[in-house]
Length: 168
Figure (tube, one colour):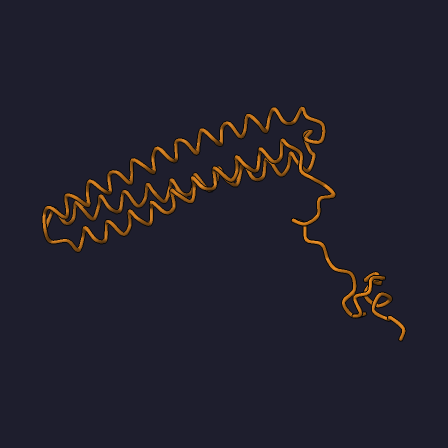
């Protein structure tokens, strides 16, 4: 029987003994391919990006915890519970602040590495590696900025609601 699939779809014919003509060649995933390994500079860059993303995820998680604690403190009728929630919320806010400061320092270090990497062959200004580095760095900065503005508005809302509750 004549194999018509390669002529129609451009799929090369598999000369192996697979027995199934319609399968074509097995596709190799990018994670399986080792024909173009990343440079050590890019691997270090992506490792630093991963650490920063973990910090940003921690900040987001803490924001959700803060919202939950605030809702519980509003529902609480006992003064001891309310005070405990206030202390816990203060601890969460402090943790978010220190994590955000650490993330900002990591982003600044990442920017320094990006500037230094432009002197390495293959990472010159305008190269694909340089564009990847700058796009990822800018995205992380924007995400941190957005998270911190959300945190500020959340804190203002909590303070406003607490003032209203005390005023009653």
